[in-house]
Length: 414
Image (cartoon, rainbow, N blue to C red; front, side, top):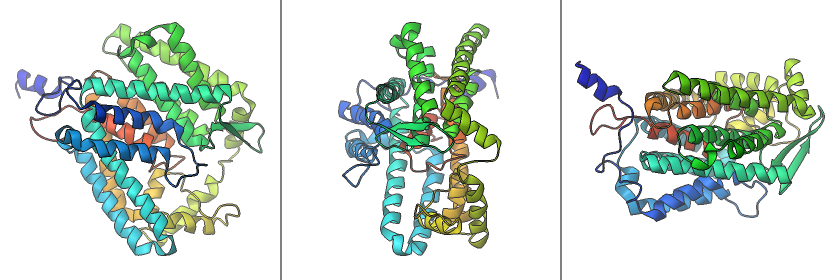
């Protein structure tokens, strides 16, 4: 391979070709703003609502309804990862239909939600191939998470749940504290990425950036989510390697170390969070120590197609003799896939996951450098203690990773 050819393969993301994806300025504004509105809604899920659908499910559907206005831009490129995820979804559908039983309606709703998420990931990743759309998406996520953290700080819509170790876990609108922490963590990482890439001039000012970062970090701590805090730490550790020059890495590293120091200080200052880590040190993992062995037992019994989506949660609740809830989550992404679709479903799912990670790694020389890798590290860490396979933030992060991957050959999907 000649030097010229090598540069062509491994060069940073080039400006998108007009024939591949339309420029952001020429994209239909209805499509772009529907996509941003979907992202804006992600931190504001309302479990205790009067309507049968999640707010984010509705905004995602509205976005998908606009995509025919830019059909070529949204659907013209098919990432290989999504092909494998589609195979996994097909296995999940087969397993669900064969084993749904009395939970058929819940299974169909879950599968429909997964289909919607795959479509959002596909179309969103294509739209974000344009750097201006990518930047606007990150800025929207930062704004949404800042608003969500501000509500928690001001006590607007706050719900608190007392924990036996002492103190209260805070969230908003009755949201799950663990997924709230993951969403806020991604928003904080996006703020770091936008600031250092020069994508939003407002965040360049330390007077604006540090209070905003402190607000979101404090909100993560007060959710009491140990997994969320560890996930945020994993993402920040990845950002330590940001920058192409020594000075850029020193400056980025110093910023990240300050943020990590604040996280440790804040976690130790909050009695509830400190007590929860002490509980973990003594072997208390909020029931996971009973859930994981039960899931492994379920896997041994049905290793091929698993127990089917949703059905596995009811079976798990029976095995651990759950007295409060009728079903229990697997609290681990891999174990969830294994117990719902067996090894037949695990293979295409992990293949798709590997291709997403590869796309993020190949795109590290682009405008936002290692940020997509940091976002993936956060979600991977977060899904080790929680499933979140049907969460919007997980598939948005996948879309960001797929969007930044450079084309290795002309006209070929990656």
